[in-house]
Image 1 (cartoon, rainbow, N blue to C red):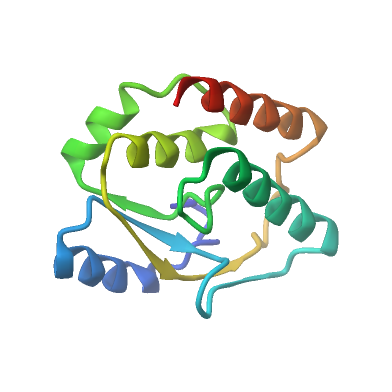
Image 2: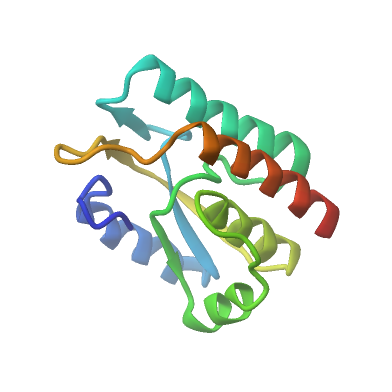
Amino acid sequence: MDADFSHHPKFIPEMIRVQATKGYDIVTGTRYSGNGGVYGWDLKRKVVSRGANLFADTMLRPGVSDLTGSFRLYKKDVLDKVIAKVQSKGYVFQMELMVLAKSMGYTVAEVPISFVDRVYGESKLGGDEIVQYAQGVFNLWMRV
């Protein structure tokens, strides 16, 4: 969950409810399914985010609509096991957590969320991060 409230806490009760209903190992908030969405981003940022998700989905086939999101609820033991296998840093970290979890057989449910761009500060997303992400997808493709 982003600490700047771009991920609104109002979605947490629904994530907990969904997790409790069927015992999912991970519940992830998704901007790209159901009535989820993004507010306050310019066209470039939307294209980059959608493109990153499409690229990773095409290469890795994780079956999750929002790999680059970070609003997630993990069972503690699942997070402990998955995070021990993570090798990446930066933006690719979120994607790697989900892809590894799915490859390890953990169950994932999605809850549509609204993501509102931060009011203060700026995104750290730049060319270097995009290259790092693409390299991370290829590296994970080789590992999984």
